[in-house]
Amino acid sequence: RSSAASDVHKRQKLSSVEDIKTAVASNPRIGQILYEAGVPLVINYQNLSTIKEGHLNDTVEYSKALAKKLGLSPEEVKTVEVAAAFHDIGKSLIPAEYLNKNGALSKDERKVVNLHAVLGYELMKSLGYKPEIAEAVRDHHNPNSKNELAQILRMADIYSAMTEERPYKPARSHYDAMRVLRDCKLPDNLIKLGNVLKDAHDDLHAPVQQRA
Image (tube, rainbow, N blue to C red; front, side):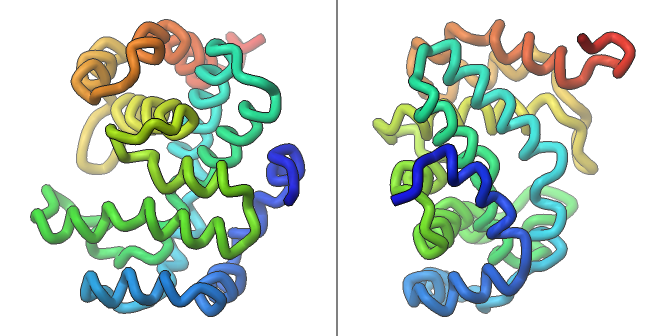
């Protein structure tokens, strides 16, 4: 199997509808998941084309910073980097009306949106990514997962979502985000690294002239 380092260079594999179509055609489990949820199998190209922007970039940087601070190996850091880059790729198979809804999702709608994690797992497997990467994508919303890389990604994902402005909400402060994270059943060794997230956030969002 390819190393995580080589997987970094395969990021563009999920950048087109054709790649998603290939993955779906080769993996009947994807269609089955959507069928059981009553969701048509349609590739949402608009979400696929914008999925790398903003939130994904921040989530990658937060994940890398946390992994390095925890003393993970270079291979593990690369693994979590790739997983972070693709953690929302399953949303390319979620109906746009759910993802872009202006207001709270219903319970049933939330269940559909939450399928993006397992759909992302199946896509990553079908395109030949390492099991460790696919599993981190699958578990990045699971508070009960024992997967350390998934928990790093989960913390980075939540922090990014909280601290960025979105059409339906203003950006929250670092301190507000940390209050939410403390209620997310994250491992204690991660919760103690709030300062790592703050430093990474400040560096990412500092005015250009202030960056080193």
